[in-house]
Image (tube, rainbow, N blue to C red):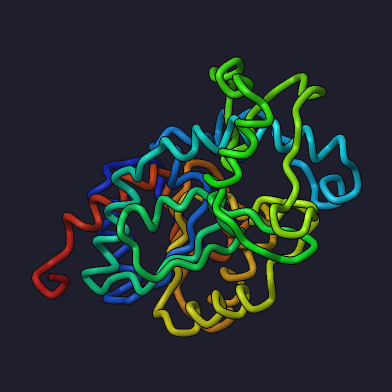
Amino acid sequence: MTDTIRPTAAAEAARRVRDVLGAGPVIALTGAGISTDSGIPDYRGPGSPPRTPMTYQEFVGDAASRRHYWARNHVGWRRMAGTAPNDGHRALAELERAGRVCGVITQNVDTLHDAAGSRDVVDLHGRYDRVICLDCRAVTGRAELDTRLTALNPGFAEEVADVEVAPDADAVLASTDHFRVADCADCGGTLKPDIVYFGENVPRARVQEAYARVDGAAGLLVLGSSLTVFSGRRFVKHAVGQGKPVVIVNRGTTRADDVAALTVGLGCSEVLRALVDASGPEDS
């Protein structure tokens, strides 16, 4: 039966988390909620507006949709590039160095776990800072593409600098009819952010790598994910099937609350920092 903690002191929540997960090490599964303290909005957290991300089928099947996406991304990726890890990211990296956490499977594309010092990160849905050609499969840096898009669209990003940006670096723009899209510099093919879109499958090798991380861990710590999509929820199911404890830290309910050993309705940063502060001599 699920044991639920209502919002209380982070220190007490951290104590309960440690009681359930034991000495570890555990694998962390992170979602957009861990990055909200960095100024990146959540997808489905309390108070989040409805979002309709572009699907893979829309992107590959319609040139106008691709133009609209790249215009929004041209603005959004710069905002994402200007964000920094928050205390939750840093605390999670500290827990990894202390041996409490053995790695991170992240559903986020913001690369903030790397920036915070986490060493073993599976970028389940890709990374916003890379671009892939759908024809020749060449991978290039997003900063390189920004230089080309800026030359093709001078002043565009500055004109719409104050718009909202979603967690996948997708800015909310109304009109993008005059935006010019860049093709692959190597083969002239279609470029796409190296991000897994809705309607697109996570590469099989990446999924297997994430399963292996769960297999090697003593438990699973879910941080800031509603687990609405199966892409992340499958790892909860996998851990439960192995008889391993699952703890969920998330503001709001999730689709795996019924199978979790413990749910904590607090923010990720405060709970993770409390976990670091509660670490004993054996963790150093």
